[in-house]
Length: 137
Image (cartoon, rainbow, N blue to C red; front, side, top):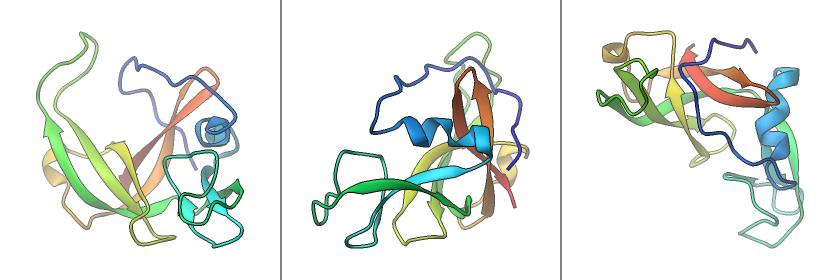
């Protein structure tokens, strides 16, 4: 999965054991999501144990494909280097109904984004952190 130039400077997460594989999987071109081996559910955002059954979670690579569940177009410039407008979306991954990530939609005009639009993950690299963003599939 390709990387894309950073949209702008970002506030980056602290890498800890419960989220490190999610934020660093892009180095291998993989979107990694926590998965429960007991009940077989994907869990996002990552946490220490499965919220459904209490089982242990491990990160697995997923397809990186999904669709825009909902979105908004931001016209407010929150950072002097942040180009506007930009799209903030909830992307529902193909692996499981209700498995949604908040992410930017990139590589298209914001007015072209629609609910249900197929998208594929890309990554913005910021040092050791690879931020998942999505582009039209």
